[in-house]
Image 1: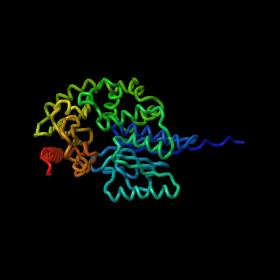
Image 2: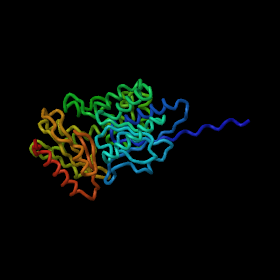
Image 3: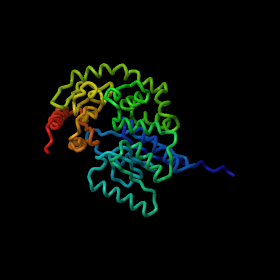
Image 4: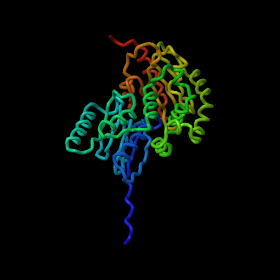
Length: 340
């Protein structure tokens, strides 16, 4: 008698926010959840790194070509191919109607006895923590052994640091990993690192030789990054407008402006990347002044999105002047005193 053929692995596509610590950690938590829900079944994970490039407001349905397809920490895509969705961004859906329809469909799925597949809560600081809590509360899956990863994802994504100086410090290896994923977090990087985060403590992964090899050139370029901010920054009342569009970024330090200009309430930064310009808008949580603007809808005007305190939008490399005009417009708007 011939031996039975090995079972074909279930193909699971994990489309997550790329170049983002929370997106990477979310992929690790979701992988653990799937392994717990399908014990003994061979699973094959494919990780897609997703970003809000010019004209890309959602994931193309053609990317969701697995037996199961998940979107994590990224804009919802209304398609029957989608089987799992986790997000915490206030701009996670294209409209309130789209959000309500997605959540209603998940409720009907639960009523029918099927596995619920849409989990959204904008009150969460990180998507990683949302997945951990859903795993525990809805599926009785405890994420033991990854508490450190969950905690750091929540701290980094909410900027819950004691000071701007602590936020830009890279003495902690996990913060070095955060810089590495911001710079190198494409699909192949996620495919290499996420499985290790499932099995190993994040501090151990952060100290691994390959991660440290990627970190070293970023560490050396941080002083150049500071000098570029000094050259490109212009104070506009309570706003610092930084133009880094002259050359691609070699290092990423999303809180560096707050450490250099602690009195600023908001920052607006235009940076150049390999395939697009990125407009980053943020509130300085260490400035001592209460936030009085919702940044997410401001970025949504430019087909971007985010949270009330931070957001971003992208522009094609052929649209530099439009990107600069958007940066100036946003900076001027944030500098105005809101109507009472």
